[in-house]
Length: 298
Image (cartoon, rainbow, N blue to C red):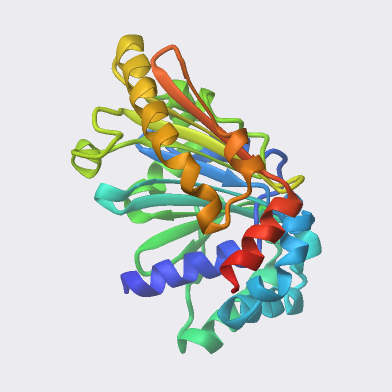
């Protein structure tokens, strides 16, 4: 059942995505404070980027292409796509996804999507019910709330109540909770952004040992630009980690050319400390990406 719910949610996320600017930052405010990670994708801008256009044939293949074709058949083609926002607590398998697109909340489009998923899975992915004055999609292990004709929220059962409260203007959002400062380090206006805590057991013994959280963004408006920050307990610790990372980078950057990384990409890497966070940025132009792709393809 859980696999069915996850598949249904993933399919919905690909079929229609949130109608808001800046990688779903506004929609992400419907993510409960219990989330330990959150992020968003500005799908409209992503699909319209040169990077996507150059790799469209590679991306839109197989199962993903089937989903794109199904979305188009349900009046939710890529011209309707805008963004997606998500939040989760992976340790408890709890999550919420805000899915919106022009028409994602319309009965006829949802019925169409339901039929497409049933064709794929062999069973209805949900039943439609009226609960507390709201049209609700009841699934095996979760629930979907139709916010309006352009927005749909899918949540795991444990978060259903908290998500509904946020839709009703009550409760506490992740933007106002424990991740507030971490989210503040991410540029939520970029194509992709993310923020979250780092479990100590996951990073123990790694160069990031001691890190508390991470935030970052990717900009695909011209090539790829990456900005990330890793938070530590204090500014002194961040400075120490920055120096260690810089030393490690200096030791390996001379080998970048041997694996096809252009010198311009190497030169773009910047490592610094800001407050209690280590910041890292790098960028690759469209030409750089082409050179890297050609090298990998040899």
